[in-house]
Length: 171
Image 1 (cartoon, rainbow, N blue to C red):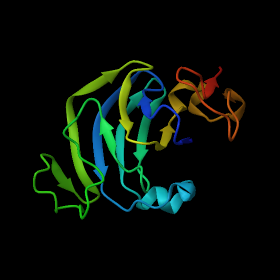
Image 2: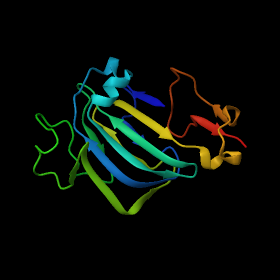
Image 3: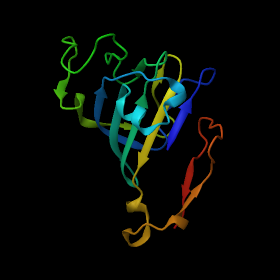
Image 4: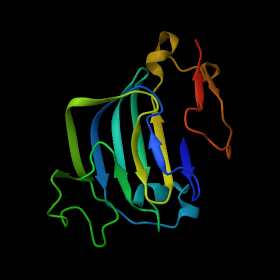
């Protein structure tokens, strides 16, 4: 799911469910124009912070993606993380206190960070996009995917307010 956060909306992003964050990966990158952020290539090349963990259904990742004029991503639980720095690429920012990996700046949380649904995780200076990737196999019978178990509460283009469900999973 890609959630677009345009100018004029609340620029804060919150945990969509109870979540245990294990890792964070900050990937410096380009800041392609916002209107083309839905293009999968722009999501792959734009600066982003991936928050990786687990929820009741299994694996999950929340990715805060920057775009031109809206690239600054701030994490409430890690205020020292800096994004949208001119000239920054892996290895350039020597002040960065985290381990450099192949894909950017990596941090593993020991112990994992626990957040309940609705907890603020961070904000953008002026909006951008959040990509949500959630596994549901642990919630489905016989560990097999059945599309009728997932009910979408929103359709493409709908406005999402904090606390509203995106999907419901039935048994």
